[in-house]
Image 1 (cartoon, rainbow, N blue to C red):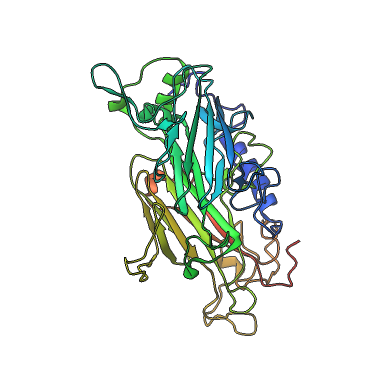
Image 2: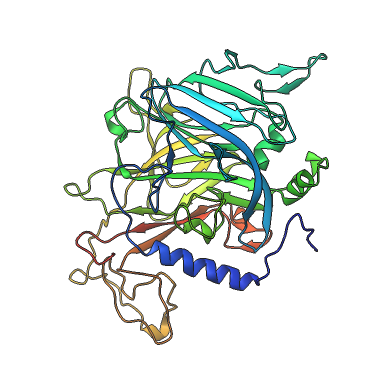
Amino acid sequence: MSLTPRLRRRGSSLRRVLAAATVTALGAVGAAVVQGAPATADAPPRNGIVCTSGGSAPGNPVFDLTTRTGYIDLPDGNTAYMWGYSSGFDPFQHPGPVLCVHEGDTVTVILHNTLEDPTSIVFPGMDDVRADGVASQPQVDGTGLVTSLAPGAAALTGTTTYTFTASRPGTYLYESGTNPEKQVRMGLFGALVVRPTLGDDYAYDSADSRFNPTEEFMVLLSEIDPYQHQAAEAHKSFNLNNYKARYWLINGRGYPDSIADNGASWLPNQPYGSLATVKPYDPVTHPLNGLARYLSVGSEDYPFHPHGNNGLVVGRDGHPLKSPAGGDLSMEKFAINIGPGQTWDVLFKWYDAEGYSPSNPVTVTVPSLANQVVGTFYSGSPYLGSTQALPPGVQTLNQCGEYYIISHNHALYQITSWGVTMTGPITYMRIEPPAPNTCG
């Protein structure tokens, strides 16, 4: 079908777009992640969660969120018109900033609306939210019809101030409460992380939820029906009976852009990557789990499927999996089946159970190179931290013998972009060799 200017095709061919994106993305992926304290939006890490802080006043973070319009790049070479919340008064970004606060904080979020539609924000899971000083509650017109799930900001120049106490740690969404079938799908959503009083390296106020803060990742899943976005840009109505998602995204990107660095220069409006860079579990040198924060604003279940390891689900929708008496109800899962509007907190680690190495080789005969298909990520060796020569003409993006294990939505029709397969919500877990290594 032909595409209107409202869903534009880039000048280069699809093959050139994907090839360039993959090489550039994985060239950045190949460098080691700088480890340290959790980074902020001013100094983001190359990989992992990027927190936006609410200023320097302890216990009273204040966030300005401004609605913007803009475009995002899609894996098939198209672009899509979107709405989004920007941090402060910055240009358009998608998705909205990750708001990080602490349990007990009095949080203030000031919404500045520049859209031609009135809008609002709701904070599912937060109690006693107030809008301009009064209880935030659904708005109705004179006939009793609900017009918004929260008091909002008028079109073009409206402002509304929301306040609440972050009383429970966990992972939450924030999103438009006005005409959400349109506005959330257009991009008015983001993640809210409430850190427990026990410490920033805990998911909840329990010792068994501790994680390595350098291995904290966001998996925010969403979808796009380009016809709805075309209609919004043209200021036309859209019949929701005809809604059909044709793109699925992870952290606002599709593969291969999904594994590029946070803040990749060629994705100025899509700041968040999803590559999970971890080190092998070791009870002495690397004993803590990583933490994946899963969120969904989609219209159906997303069965996300990390290959190669199970995850321990320790919380859902901001509630730790504990019995009323405090007993452990966490559960191990191989696929994380995230429903619409849900959030899941999942601890994970990677370890070499068999301890295979050149001195403890795999007990199979490795085929000759003539009988192998050498993949883009292969180091030439099946052993972590080991590299070997590759056949002539074969290029690799593997830097130092690291492993790459794919993670993707296991509803396979959802890892497409308007029919282009192996795109959409796909990412990788990169396992770095134990130190010392040559990873950079």
